[in-house]
Length: 319
Image 1 (tube, rainbow, N blue to C red):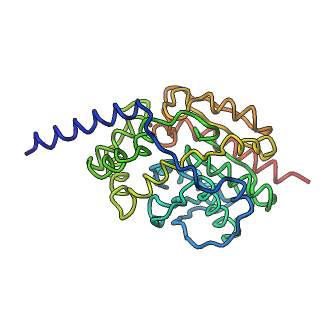
Image 2: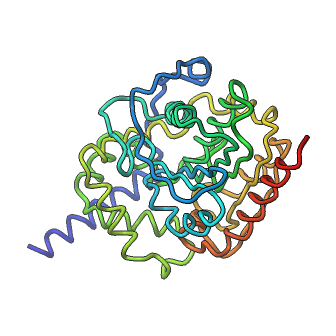
Image 3: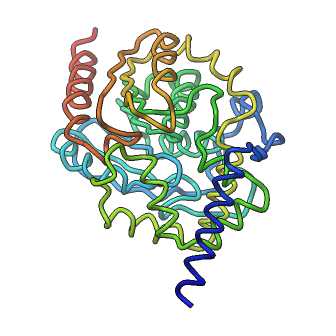
């Protein structure tokens, strides 16, 4: 029985690899674009799971695709020594609601996060976004710059989506009809998570079993697989190139942190983003993968602390 099960897994994995390379993903094209979202209302019909610790200026941490606020576990306490650190779970992930609807785009997530910020009356806000969550953070910042320019102090972007790009293989597979649902509902959750983390980490030896177990438990929650599949199909908006024209007008101080070895979002994206964001600084790290905050947080913290402190002090002495 065990050998039959393992054989089934190997066959599925071979099928996955072959179809991933063949580029069979089908992205949702009928979701609203930025033109519709930028004028959307501020009603908050869905409440995101969140937590807060520490006091001081608020720092909002936005996780990436397939993750949750757990991905910031090494960052929260060090920052909370000086700041109010707020984590949220994006719609469909962690402990947040996972409705079976078709609204899981970056723009929809940004609308919900923008509403969270306004409803909680956050001021002097620093936003930190990673990967898919970095794309959300960009859209949130553009929202706020247009309607509430006094709310946000700074932005930190980490290995984030920003422009049209080749989809990572695992996203391509999830967005493939038939194969995506087959894979996510058939393969053991721990196996799926471990395979993904091997793409995320530069050094696979640093992947903790506790992280595999945590993310697998999240994937097993009701409707979590539906949310993951839907997000994969909507992860790169069809009008993303047009949306990127907004970056040149985003004047907020921005720290861009990237891994030179990132296998998911190449460092060329970070370099291009640095060129387009007029008030940005780029830091490129070596020997770490897509999620430095999980793999080697000690590399990230000095840059993050220095940037946040500088922006806090600059605002404090501004006339």
